[in-house]
Image 1 (cartoon, rainbow, N blue to C red):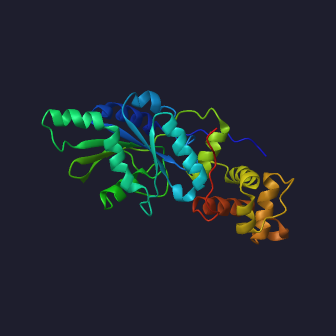
Image 2 (image 1 turned 45 degrees about the vertical axis):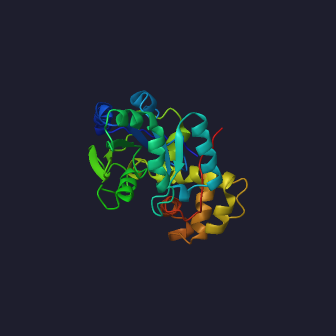
Image 3 (image 1 turned 90 degrees about the vertical axis):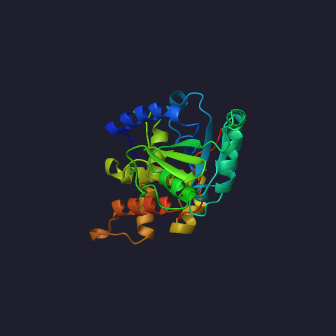
Length: 285
């Protein structure tokens, strides 16, 4: 199974980082959305330096697609490091009621100073950041109670900073998704690619599917057995697993060969659509 060299840093992301840095002085805190299936890999390592000491809240989005035990461990992991974390589900809005109280808790000292100066009900301004396709715009729309931010299930839709008034006293600044210039760890790049955070058109989807199948075979064999009737998988490499999936689904072409590209796209689409169940790709150490 070949190694994958995944690099993705379009020019607009450099511009976005500069805009985020310039806008920090306009906000009181930062809500950082991460993918609950890969909370570490979906955190831009540049955030710590870029955001500095600005109060921060981590929102583990898409938690309905992640292993609930894993998500609970990640919440504990972040809070042990002094960062408030909440698991949310954008479709059901589960976890949403806890977001604003958490923001007020984080900003308690600032709010107290405002009140001492007679600034009652001073608007709280929150910057929403995250990598592409992590669900920032959907989060804002749900919180605002209407489709105000542009959303689409592909990376790179939001291109400029946008302000949204959620309610009286609360404003959100939506920012484009930002990856980082170079993936030092191939596994990080692979995990991001599995979830669609990197555009498929720059990837070898068959090689990507082979890597994902090995991970699922080792960590979630039940998912493969239930979804694709793949039970005898011991000793098979990624390509063998991909061929087996194609055979189980009847994806054959002339000569009885497996259409591996179709099998790969099916696996990735169904994983991203949650059809393989709740799967966490990484756990806290």
